Image (cartoon, rainbow, N blue to C red; front, top):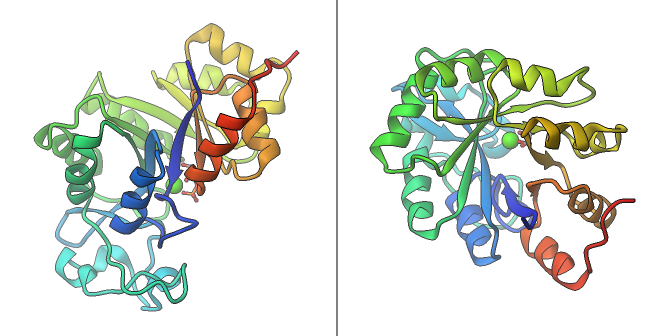
Length: 248
Ligand code: G3P
Ligand code: CA
C-alpha cells in the first residue's frame, strides 16, 4: 500500500498550526490525513492546540485548561505564521465536521503529559462515536497511560505509541499496550531490523518530523504506512515524481 501523507498540525507550513485554515489547506493539498493536538478546555471540551499554554501561538499568558471554549475562541492564534490574519482555536468537533465528508484520517494526538485532564479518554471516545467518526480516528500520545485509558474505553480504538529519542524494544511495548501502531521519529527507522520487526508483528508505522527530501523518500522506501509532515503538497509532488525503489 502507498505511504500516506498526514499533514502535521494541518498544512502548518502554509497556515497557522492546528487551525481550520491549516486543515482546509491540507484537504486542498491532497493529504490523506491530518495530525492535530488536543487539550481540554475549562468546560471540558476537546480543543485543538499544541501547547498546554497559550503564549507561543497567541501571545496571551495562561493555560488552555483555565479558559472555557468561548474564552479560547476570542484568541488569535496566528502567531506561527506572521501576517497571516486572524485564526482561531477550533473545537475538535468542528474539525470532525470538516473532515468527515472528505474521507481523510484524523490522527488525534492526545496531549496529556504536562497537564492531566479528568475523563479525557472517555470524552474523546464519546465524541468520536457521537460525530460518526468511528474508524476514522487514529489516537496517539507520548503518554502510555493515556493510550491504556483509550483502549479501556474502546477495544476497537486505533492507537499508536508516540515517542521521541530512542526506545528499547518499542515493538514489545506496542504489543503490551495493544497498540495498532508506533509513531516513531523518522531517525528511528534507521535502526537495523526495526521496520522489519514492525511488519512481522503487524504494527503500523506512522513516522513524524519528515520534512526534507531525503527523509521523505527514506521513510517511503522503508514501507511506512504514513509520514507526518508540515508540507503535504511538497510531499505529494515528490512522491509522484520519484520512482519507488525498495531498500536493499
Ligand atoms: O505526532 C507527531 C508529532 O506531532 C509529535 O510532536 O510536538 O509536533 O506534537 P509535536
Ligand atoms: Ca502533535
